[in-house]
Each structure stands twice: as structure tokens, then as C-alpha cells.
Image (cartoon, rainbow, N blue to C red):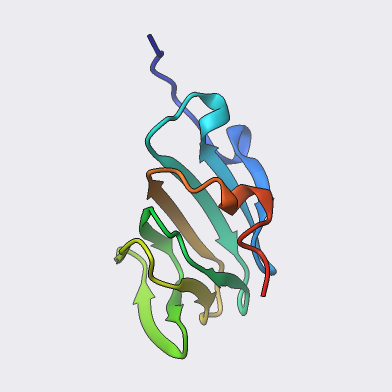
Length: 124
């Protein structure tokens, strides 16, 4: 049986790269999370988290601070601190920090999409 853990993103997160910002995986299969992943990102102004698709995973993004847009192909939808973005499985998406301050977000995918961490999704 598993155990309850209290995690701090900057202490417990492991870096992974998608586009030009760096993000951290917080909950992931190698630590025992079987059904969900959780990621944390602090992206500087202008940074873009590359567009990608989770073929079999839904994605939820929670904007903690800053502002940006979620990009799906050529469509751009603005969001700001406090907004929650839902991305159905199979829909291309990425985020861009369009503000003047860091964009801080958490995202979770269910079920886990391991391609996010292997570099498979970080390609044109």
C-alpha cells in the first residue's frame, strides 16, 4: 500500500524540458503515481511550452500567477491567474507567457502520458 506524501515543487520536482521553458514533474509513475501526473512550471515572459498532444490523457492546467494564452494550432485563448484550463485527450495544446511577469502553473494529466518526460513530445 502507498503512503501519503507532502511535496514541495522546488524541493521535490525533477526538471524536464518542453520548448524553451523548464518545468518540473512533481507526481509521476517512477515515484508510484499510477493514474495521474502533476507538473509545475515557472515560465519567464515570452516563454512557450511547446504544442503537443496527449493522445489518451486529459490535461488540466491551473494558472497560479501571471497571464498567458493556451495555443491550439493557430487558435490562442487568453488566461490569467485563477483560471483553470481543461484540454480533452487528443487535442493539440501548449502555453505561452504573454505577460510581463513569470507565468506559474500546475498541470495534471490522467492517465499519465510518459512521452511528456522522455522528450518524445518536445519535437516538431
